[in-house]
Image (cartoon, rainbow, N blue to C red):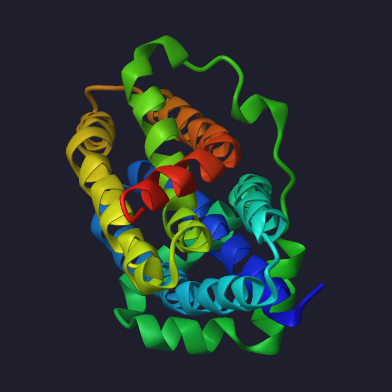
Amino acid sequence: MDFKLIELIALTIVIHLIDTLAYSVRLNSVKSGKYALSLSLFNIFVLISRTANMVQAPLIGIIIGKCIADGIDPKLDIHLVTFAATTGTILGILFIPTFLKIFSKAVDKLDVKGSVPSIVVEALHINNIKRMVRSTTKPRKSMWTKLRYKEIPKRLLLLNTFITAVYTIGVLSAYYSSFFVKEEFRLAASASSGMINGVAAILLTLLVDPQSAIITDQALRGKRPYGDVKALVIMLIASKLLGTLLGQLLLYPAARIIASFYS
């Protein structure tokens, strides 16, 4: 396997692992009542994810460009990268209990110290790393049983599944589409990735985030039980996982549809 492909797969796993953990931040913010502090601290992880995103596109371009030059269909490589999104999501699910345990302590320290860099430096100390390793917690069945799933809008979950699928394959399908168009249109086809992900971001902001925020805010104000936020997070993560799998099915059709605009 090409080293660039391995690097791309690793980056994709990191991106989706962090995106999955982002859902669980709602749980800590409601439980601790420190929503702003939780969000501020998690922005560090968001920066890591966004940096990985910036590196991802050039790597995809290199792989697709090499395949075009060699006359090889990069379909398998693209599907492997899409599968990495599913892998990252599953790893995120497994790490949530451990992440919440460590994240909760970090938020408390931020409340006292008031400095994110100092917490990061302290976390990198070898003794603290050992403590974090010892804090590893396995997901328990009780985490997702006896929750009020019926209180979560099903439309919200369907939208999140579809938007996740689009977000997962947006860049990949746009770059893959350049394999099916004439040389003079390849740059234009690959540049469509920004537009596709932009549409996904708009849909997420307008249709998913407000509903999720309402449920979270109501729980913060005591108008809903904490279990509702827990059910929301679990269902959103489940729909995200389904979205990455749906992306596998949409990848090739999406690439062909994009290519048709430049035929």
